[in-house]
Length: 263
Image 1 (tube, one colour):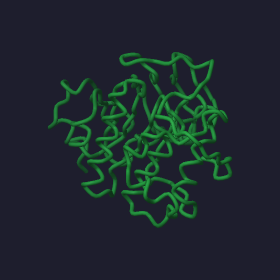
Image 2 (cartoon, rainbow, N blue to C red):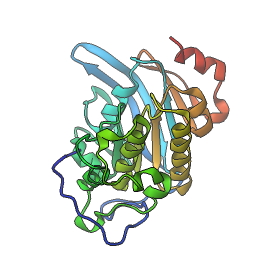
Image 3 (cartoon, helix red, strand yellow):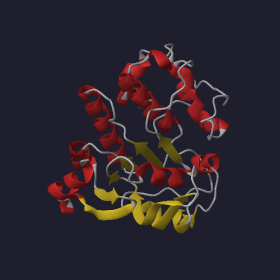
Image 4 (cartoon, helix red, strand yellow):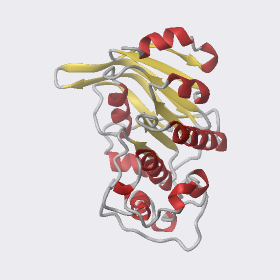
């Protein structure tokens, strides 16, 4: 996210919707927005991912689970363009992303909430939200009105610095900033990490709302099994860079998955 991105204040806030672009075809529930096929990824000579396949559809939550260090964040970095893949392909709307830069992927509608939140601590809440304008056309540079329905605490803290917020409030801010971009694919990396239970419930309700709108695909990386079990429509489990289990929520074997989540 570009800290120097132009901040434009909207007179009439709009609900979250896909940003206007003649080149973008809006998907509806049941259609894949993201398809990763047989992805391999290396850091130098060290291989982090082997033959990973996963898809994310509009109106569904696709969860990627696994212990720390098994390749979950590496996969997300490949999706958002921060790390090139060494084999396989990643498609968005059926078109290969190749080596497209992260900012160009953001313009396509890929929004990333990284582990650790990564907000701007010296900017106000409002200014943090406005950094989400960077990939948008000028006409779309508004803060969607339903962001404050999802996270009402932010509406009362617009002039407060991001660094003064609690960890849970910062996580809500990071998700809200991603939603300002009107994403078609929302990528969440460990959104419950270090968050108090009441705010985890708020984040879960927000994810449910976004899923039920039917226009956004949600790719969720998470270790908190109960959170995933409640929200995810499909899942994949990584272990040492390999997918060792995958399927729908109905296919999920809690005991098998929990074994891959414990150290």
